[in-house]
Length: 345
Image (cartoon, rainbow, N blue to C red; front, top):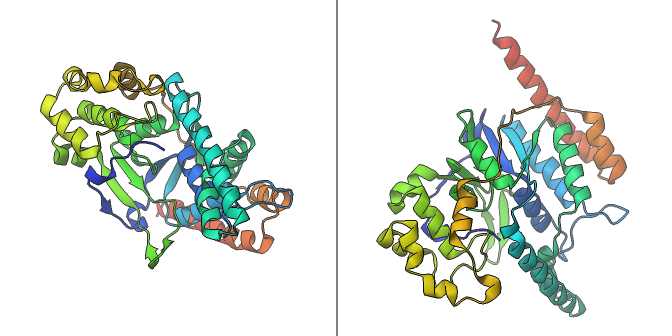
C-alpha cells in the first residue's frame, strides 16, 4: 500500500556503482514484502522448503544483497516496532484484500489460469514473526547491520537517513519523504530485469531527493505532508476520493497553511463513511513526531557456518549455489581487509 505520488515526484536513474562505499538504511518490512511478492514460482506460489515453509524472503535477502555488498554498499536493515493505532485501518484493509485475492486465486487455479494465479498469489503474502526473526539472523550472519526500531521502520530509516554518514533510505513507498528522508532510493533490491507483455525491460535504481522534490513542486515539507494526507497514507488509506496527486498539489499551493488546506476539504472529510474518516491533525503529528531514536551501526563479520545452517540445513537451499555466493562474500571480506591494510602504507 503506502502513499502514491509517483506522477508528480522528480527522480533520476542511478547506477548501483554510484552507491559504492555509501551507507543506506533499508525499510526492512517494505523490502521483505517485495521479496515475498516478486520471488515466486510460475503459478504465483512462493518458494518453499521441503517442509512447505516459505523461503522467498530468505532467497531475496541472500542473493540480492550479495550483489549490493559486492558493490561495497553498506546496508542497514531497519525493522518495524509497534505501529501507531492509526495504522489499524491499513491492517484491516490488507486482510480484506488478502481474502478477496484468495477467492480470485482459487478461481484462477480451478480454470488453470497461470497468469491469474501468479497475479493473485502475490497478494496473499503475510510476514510472520518466525520469518522476521530468521531474516534478522541471516542479515546479521551476512555482516549487514540490523536495527529494531521502537516504532515504524520507515520513519526510523528516514530519520537515520538525515545523519551525515547515511546517503539515503531504501523503500518502494513514498512515505519516507513525508517522514523527512533527505533521499529515497527505489528499485535497489529488485531484480535487474522485469518481464512485461512487450518483453524484458531493465530495472534501474531511482534516486529521489527531498530538496529537489520540494523545490520543483514549490512547496515545503509541511505542505508535502498535507498533500500526502489528501491523497491517502497508511494512516488514512482512502484519502479523499476525487482528489488525486495533481489536484492535491493545487490545493496545498493555493491554501498553503495546513489549517486552511483541510478547512477547504472539510465537507469531503465529513462526508466520508465512518470507517474512512480521519483526524488530519493526528496524522500530521505522526509524520512530524514519529517514535524514533538514535542508533549506532554494527557491521559484523560474515558467519559462513550460520548462513549455511539457515539456508542449507534448515531450509534446503542448494549447497552448491550457496557456496558460490559465499565465495563472493569471501572476496568482499578480503577486499575490505586489503583496503584496511592499505591505509597504513
